[in-house]
Length: 307
Ligand code: ADP
Ligand code: MG
Image (cartoon, rainbow, N blue to C red; front, side, top):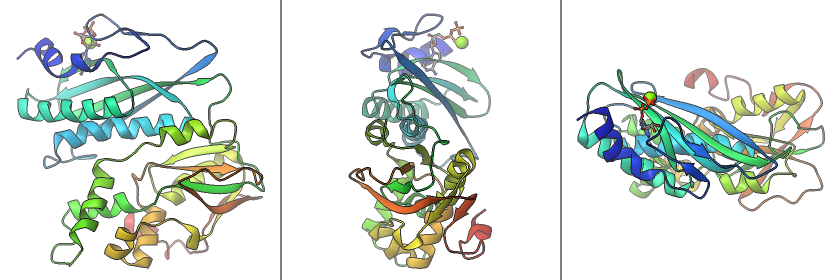
């Protein structure tokens, strides 16, 4: 099968959208962006051996590549516009490509991100997804605006994907963990939810925002550094799911929330007089100084152990 057959069979049907003027098939795509908005662009790569293995379902690879890129749009407060896909693969594997296109299609519909172009080349298996979104001019959310006195908030629950990863890696074989809990935790890893609607709702309210892709401590430190302040996090306030606590126990669950990655929740700061959005909780406050304080030593966070 030629490169063109691969594109026609697996990718060219996902390209229609309200703002798509020209999709797959020409030298470039054309998109219309609402007047007085800024184009927001982010790229994420997924590489065999680093982000997924030979055992990972290609459907999950496709879905997650888009969802993790979409999460960067959420963190900017952007509305999804379109995406492109750079695909490198050693040979044409129809079964794998079929799964990939199913996962892409699911994410493309869910996030309203039509696939408007890309590049298909031969080489070691890797995907690069570039997502584009838009925001009214001046309203994008940055990492850099947190003020002393703001509250630190986070959506959803943290640590689930990290435990899901250790389950997939077979690290808990022989240990009795409830099947429904396992299913929930692995799903949190394989089908992360980018918080697009929350990001949009935070425009004009949040003083800073980031998506939690590298663990709460790491991502909180990005806000602290960019904003020139200190983030104080109350460990008891960190939202943990019941399945995670059941599977991992309180202490390990907290460690995973602090240092595990790929939760794709939003971490943001809000002025003291703002209502807390549904589905989010206050976990701390912004103070003068630098860095992140969660009341634990580096060793107690399990940081050394997981990195
Ligand atoms: P060119 O040589 O002009 O770069 P290509 O032959 O690489 O064009 O691609 C043909 C068309 O198919 C282009 O519109 C391109 O954007 C699209 N395309 C190529 N690979 C992919 C892919 N993996 N996913 C979606 N569209 C793709
Ligand atoms: Mg090309």
